[in-house]
Image (tube, rainbow, N blue to C red; front, side, top):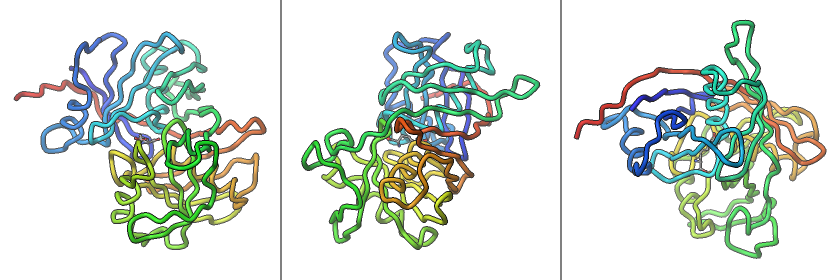
Length: 284
Ligand SMILES: N[C@H](CCC[C@H](N)C(=O)O)C(=O)O
């Protein structure tokens, strides 16, 4: 099986192009666990499938390192958009990609040699009700700066879905916050029936935030595109950043520019890069 390894700000995935290479009855959850493991496979935060779609121009499926299928992946979408344009599957710079979390619209920005250096994505509207996150509680209620007791800790949490679930904490000690300890406690809390991605945020100014993530199904990663979007939505809901202007989000792997428009759509701009192409042998 041919694969391409790519990353968005260090959040790296193994991509399989199913547009020309259908992989019938493949156990993608097991494939993700094996391929993501650096000892038995290639090593990555998960795998991403590029598929045909009946609802959009293309379809993306993402499986985390633990094999769980994610409903969206912001960094993965920029990599998929770059791959599709660079490999001439996308003939226009603007096209749509179906995800389990909904259809997004992408715009690639190629340089003079037709190489994509940056991708802008309309990630659609965030979902804020507990029923849509999903999380326990009144399905119509929102979780904005709500004190949640998880394990032996209590935190003020804001929850946002970008098609996939995010819990956002605002902290002053973003570099020393014990994310490896608290992350799994919140990820596996019974408050979140489909688990949750945990993001911690330090607000530097009304136009600039810092963000680190413990990803559902992958743990600590260098970046999370949907998480960066959720962080800006949460900061806006808590009146910590200005509205309707581009917010710079600093992640361990680099920067993204995120903005909310007057129709509540979240826009994300950032890079994507190839690491390698190869042939997966997978001897038993
Ligand atoms: N772990 C996420 C999927 C990957 C999201 C992240 N890598 C991004 O760039 O948005 C989930 O299961 O909801």
